[in-house]
Image (cartoon, rainbow, N blue to C red; front, side, top):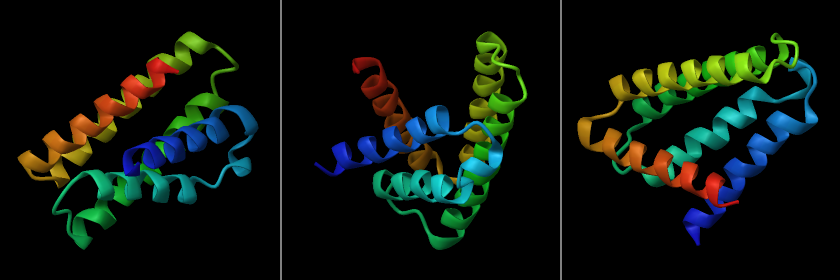
Amino acid sequence: MKTLKSYLSIGLAFIALNVSASKKSDIDVQKFAEIQTGNIMSHVKGVNSDQENKIFLVEQASDNALLDARNNNNGNSDAIRIKMNSIRADRDTKIKAILSADQFVQYQKMQEELAAARIAK
């Protein structure tokens, strides 16, 4: 049930990011980063407060970059997708540097589950 709530929270946040916003000011990037960080905290064991703060900053920067990519590519879905994949890979690299090896494995598992849930929709 906890996992389902996490998936729903992230799904709703992505919907808000992709559907309702046409300008950067329309989205509360900080709130979105808080949701993503909270999801990591609930799925990755042993994350300390220093790691949590660093993860939040990475998520916030990533969300800002994703939003900029969406807003600055004039609806070119291929360009947006390529840029978003690059931003996500960069985010994962930064998060890998923050987490221990075991924690990063848990993070990757969480990401795979989220991807599977999106595909299943």
